[in-house]
Length: 120
Picture 1 (cartoon, rainbow, N blue to C red):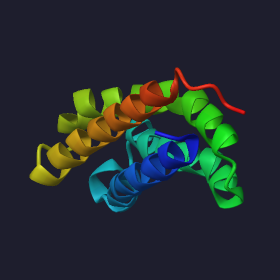
Picture 2: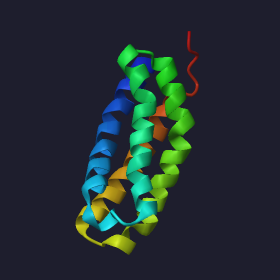
Picture 3: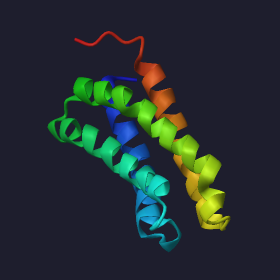
Picture 4: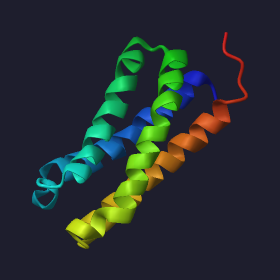
């Protein structure tokens, strides 16, 4: 996989994270829960961190930023998966937690596939 292909794949995966963000941002159940609000904010921060380099087509910078912010996104996904039942055990929350964990896993796999690559 080339760096450009990796960037494009992560960008598609982030579209799924963005849908989780939209769900959480508008979910009444989390509006008074400061910790839960941080989950959708972290998704926003991660996406916005890589977006300018995507728009420029700068795959190296995109992948560098994607790697650099991944730990925080992973931490938010783990928190949400462990804590969503505090606010609701509805299927929407279950699926959002599963989806966000899947996003992190896919980004990790894509970054791992590019880790051994030498960038020009």
